[in-house]
Image 1: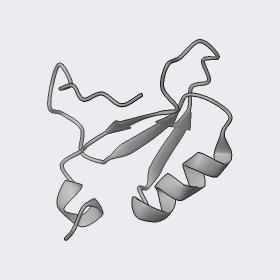
Image 2: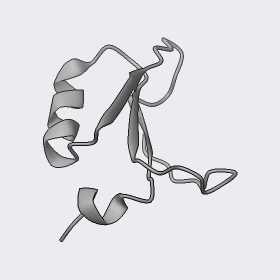
Image 3: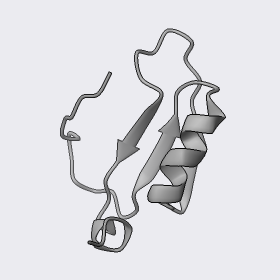
Image 4: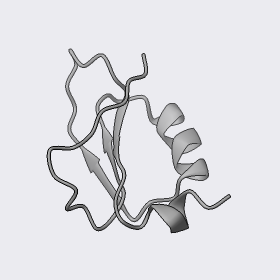
Length: 65
């Protein structure tokens, strides 16, 4: 499942990945594409999502074309 939403406030300096389940194979595939500096684990076995990505003000470095 994939969804998009805006944060309540745009105060995030750095892009963050939050791991929601223990599927590390998917995480490593994601991390190879988006090597962010901050990764947190917030495991929730009932989560519909594998990850949450919060886009920070550093998005131009992370998502450079």
